[in-house]
Image 1 (cartoon, rainbow, N blue to C red):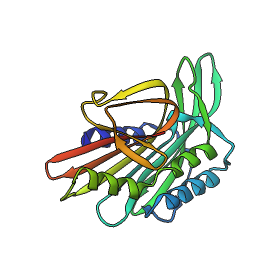
Image 2: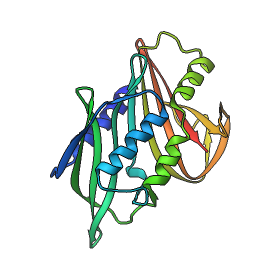
Image 3: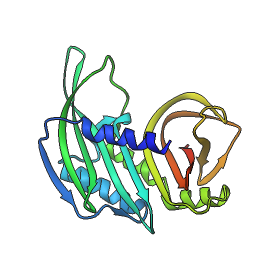
Image 4: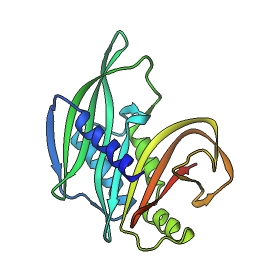
Length: 219
């Protein structure tokens, strides 16, 4: 599962074309969610956007890893539609990725052939949803609840999904332990229903030759 997450991240980073502009942010180190939101807002400002800009919900992503005391922000990204013509939608992709302990950010243009655009969310609302995720608290909960020790590294990915009264059960995935977080309480349920646009956090613990992976739904 760890290899799959890494491959997905690499595919995203190399799939852009036609770089327009780039800039650097000071550090890729993230101690808590507040610092993540600060970096996200700084990125939005540098891109010339504001909190009211609407983006496809499934184009927003955050990837972090942790091997020592703090997380390192591996990447953060979102897309903005710029034009459309006969079912071909032009997007600008804005992403920042870790290079030499700093965040190197760039803007790319890509042509996406889609029949229908997905629901959009404002960057401000996206930031609000991300702020509900206490990364350190979540990691500590998983470590204690599932008695995880001798952890070599932790990988965390945040993505947005839209659900239509979907029933999540312990059999939904063969790879993840499915967990629901509601009103600051996280717990594994035999089944639960989730509806609307939500933020989902995938957490992977590398323990020797084994991985423990969790998919956490914030409701």
